[in-house]
Image 1 (tube, rainbow, N blue to C red):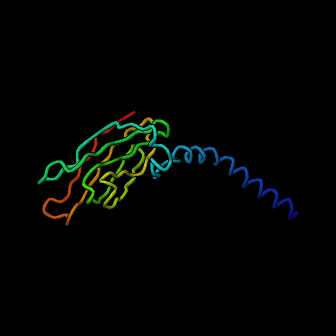
Image 2 (image 1 turned 30 degrees about the vertical axis):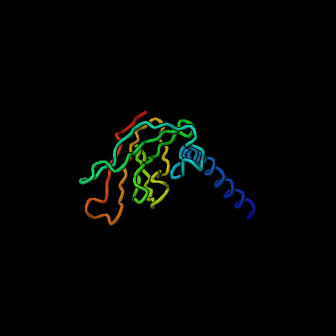
Image 3 (image 1 turned 135 degrees about the horizontal axis):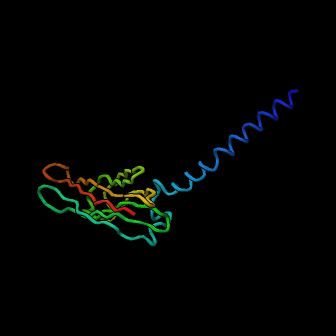
Amino acid sequence: MKFRVTAIAVGAVAAALLTISPASAQAAGRNYYDHKDPYTTGCGNAAKVVRTGSLSNRIDGKVGTIQLWWSGRCKTNWIEIRTASSAHGTISVYTDKGYDRFSFKQGNGGRHWGNMMYGNNMCAWGSASVVFGSGRGGQNGSGGTTKACG
C-alpha cells in the first residue's frame, strides 16, 4: 500500500511539472538576456542605434548624448550614453513589459551602457541622469529618447 501511495504522489507531481514546464520554458527563453550586459553576451556585436537624444542641464546646455540600441540577434534594447568621464549616474531602459536601471561610476572615457531588456514586437525607450563634480550649481544633467516600436 505504501508503494502505491508514493507512486501516485510522484505521478501527480510529474504531471504538474509537465503542465507548468512549457510556459516556464517559454518565459525563461524569451527573457534570457534581460538585465545582462550587451557586450559580454555578444548582443552588442551586430546592434544598431534606433533613437538618439541629448543629456542636458540648465546651465551648460548639452552635457552628453543618449542612444537607444537594438540587437536583432538577441531581440533586446539597451541604453548607451556619452558624457564627461568624471560623471556618474543612472541609465534606464524601458519596454512595454518592464525596465532595467543601471548605476555607473566615473571613467570609461565617458561611455557607459546599461543592461538589456527583451523588446521584440513592443516599444522601448530610455533615460539617463548624470552628476559630475559636486552635482551642485548645474553639475548634473538628464535626458531621454523617444519611443521606438517594432
